[in-house]
Length: 182
Ligand SMILES: Cc1cc2nc3c(=O)[nH]c(=O)nc-3n(C[C@H](O)[C@H](O)[C@H](O)COP(=O)(O)O)c2cc1C
Image (cartoon, rainbow, N blue to C red; front, side, top):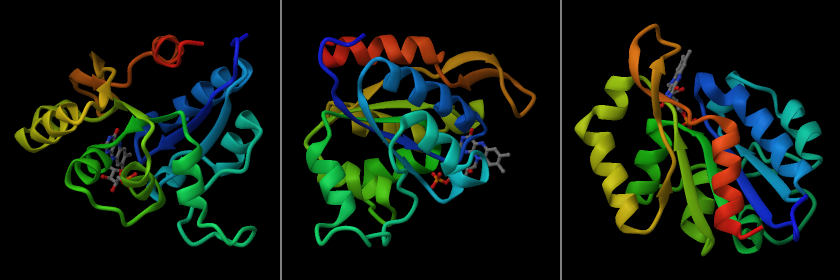
């Protein structure tokens, strides 16, 4: 059990590894953290908000314009309250958005609006990961003190062997616990 639960925004993006975010949300919640899941539209093609809502025991944000309960924009509140923004799995697209300051969905808007630490766990096809565009985006973000965990090598969902697999969930949880000093 965590000594003190922290406020974690968990971004989930459109990757075949999105189902692993369910385990991550569950483990972090069981450790006593408050986990607020934010899904991109594409992530919802891979896993349902309901699964993540039940496992995180919190409402899941799926839309920038879903502002029915509060005058204060929900994405700004999530950004302000976060101790950590973790994106797992992080698509090449979201890494590119973060690196270039785009903010046309909830997750990328939260990235720009938060002062919290940011940890990215990429998952993608090996050629996408090794593409100079992605590598330049990763370098840009690292220069801004954004942390990366993974990806690891192995058999990828696209059928190729190579680098691009999401880092094991237990490893991501351990890294988060160290970052948060829990
Ligand atoms: C079956 C399938 C699996 C995919 N897996 C990945 C992936 O692991 N990583 C990735 O960067 N993109 C992957 N994509 C492409 C993304 O879903 C696509 O780039 C999407 O626009 C990402 O949107 P988002 O970043 O807003 O979630 C996949 C697409 C399909 C159809």
